[in-house]
Image (cartoon, rainbow, N blue to C red; front, side, top):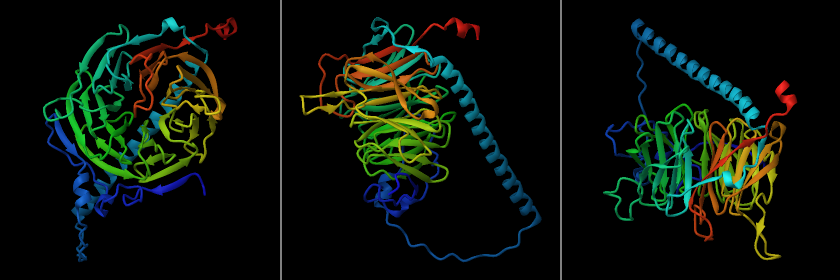
Length: 458
């Protein structure tokens, strides 16, 4: 069997949630809601599951003659649609070209990376329980982090001080508490820094104004914990993934639900996207990576890991990196059915002699449009890797000492620092507890070798 499949996104696919009727197979285009803030927007999943499909009545064809005025109007609309499509295509090509240019600049920046001294790593403490996820603002000035204590903290990068805290609420206070009342598993920020999205174990997605931390909307519809969020770059389109095995598309500007995609056979554990109208997901124990082509309504399916794929990150539009609980890190091309490179036991093993088990890879990160990636586990180290020429392999650069479960990793846009979200427990469970670890944010500076005389002369 080929390891790469192209599948039409039929909502009746066997990967869809049990009980969903054929009505769920139709694409629901943005149902615009009342624009009031704190509005709860549902994807109507519950209604779909109980709906009884109606028999289609044969329609009578009515012939009529088009008037010259109607013909002019129709042709004008068609012309405007063509112009819009051409403009969107041109914008996407320009964005892709600018990303390539940025990538060349990034390669120059990261070419001579060296390990920082342990004394240069800053630790920000503020969460009572393990940090599960984080994002860095596009200008690299602030960090948002979230944790199992249901709180969200906004940090100032330069001073390390808290700028704002959105406290978590207790279970049972959902009706009156503005914020999360269950473990937060994922977060994302729009590329213009306007919106922050957070997802939790209670199946909820919350939208915040990033500047003020004001709560705006609540999106409902997932039937399981929300495990992945990503804004399409340059837009306010939001992709969400869940343990209910589905991917949903939302329009945050319109405060609206767009559509639901099915395909995974197990809980989705991670999601990412860039500029194109597509996203990538990690399927946990179904051991697949999927590329969802939203506009084409199709998906590509990749196989490669032997264990549960727990994290995924796009390096650029054509390449991605994943990590699994079998201890492996894989480098992929969206055009190849198998990994371009696999590093087994990327973070070593633990356990008694003869019973050794690999350290799970809990997080991965990529400095976008560069050749530098990172992975985290619970072996007291964050590992940095370099992609070899043409992304054919992964070469270790250096490791950074970080004690605890590295549940989240993010590079700054400038490539000047790497941030790790660390906890005493894994973000998805309580299989182990590392008592000596600190729940916090680690800011790791990325140092460069000073240029040689030859490089200066060049």
